[in-house]
Image 1 (cartoon, rainbow, N blue to C red):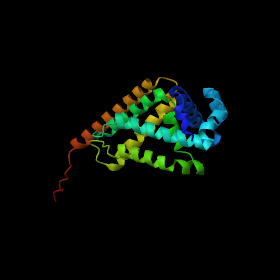
Image 2 (cartoon, one colour; image 1 turned 90 degrees about the vertical axis):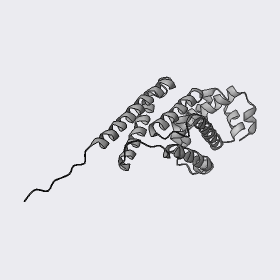
Image 3 (cartoon, rainbow, N blue to C red; image 1 turned 180 degrees about the vertical axis):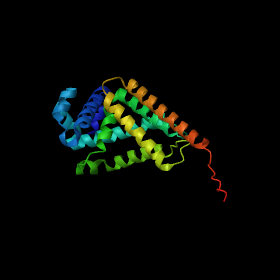
Length: 216
C-alpha cells in the first residue's frame, strides 16, 4: 500500500474505504470488482491501483483497517467489568451501531470475511484475523448467564442469541437507520435475559422430591 493514501482528505479516504467495504461485503474477494468500486465512489480505477497496487492489496488494507477500527470502538464501549452475557452482547451491538454511522458496511464485511477461502487473502490477513478473533473471544468468554447451571442449556441460549441477532441484521440492515436496528436487537436481548432469569428462578424453586419407601 502507498502511504500517500493518508495524505488524501479524510472525506476522500472514507469514500474509498466505504466503496471497497461495500463491494467486498456484498461479493466476497473473488467476485468483487474494482469497476463496481469506481461506480460506487466515483474514483478512477487508476487511483485505486496507485494507492493499493492490486485488489489483494486493497482487501488486505480494508480488512486491517476494519479490525483496528472495530477493536478501538469495542474497547471504548464494552465495560471490562461486565459479567452478564446479554449485557456484553448488547454493548458489542451498540459499538457496531456507532460504527455503522461512519462505515455502514464494515460489520457486514467482517462477517463476510469469516467465510473467505481464498488462499492469498487468508495468508495476507492471518495476523489481523487472529487479533480480531482473540478480541471477540476475550469479550464474550467472561459472559455469564445467571441462574442457568446447565452448561448445555447456556450454550443453546448463546446460539439462540447469535441467531436472533443475525436474523435481525439480515432482515433490517440498510433498510432502516442503525439506531432502529440496534433498538430491536436490544429489545430481543433484554427479552432473552429476562427469560433466562425466570428459568433460573423456577429451577431454584423446584422442591427436591423425596420418595418415601412403601411400608411392607
